[in-house]
Length: 215
Image (cartoon, rainbow, N blue to C red; front, side, top):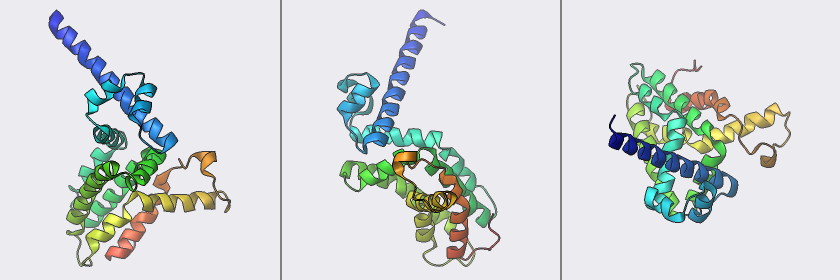
């Protein structure tokens, strides 16, 4: 390796490390405060505000990077498996399972993001774009189902939303605590959302006319 190539590789590694540190800072800040302040993120990542702009261009660009990091670490790459399965109901089940794992990865950050999307137009556009991709996937998979209702795509989209898993998981957590009201301050609302996956599969199958032998 030439000295020039080595320096370029080292420089790129430094840029990647800085970028990852900013994204991690944005996630932590969002989870703690429910908002996105570029100044606060820059301070937390120990970089200049200009560096955040240079790396991401805007708040929307930073949020896109946060969403990409959540998707990568939350296993969204596995979603492609659902579209390769020959059995249409197995494909839908896999879609539900992968979404459950993704929503569970950083439940608090995701909850904050989606709540902020209702208040901030810029955040709303980022989340709406992500939801549109899930809507498209739901349309493809529901279109393969035999004798599915006309609104099957909409039902699958709604039932695989974060809010569905979050609500079902909260019910499971409350039951596990013998009906005691779980305080967000105690657990951060960070319990395992995957406990809701089986319930979502049953709901999807019931709503879309599928077999009752859900896992």
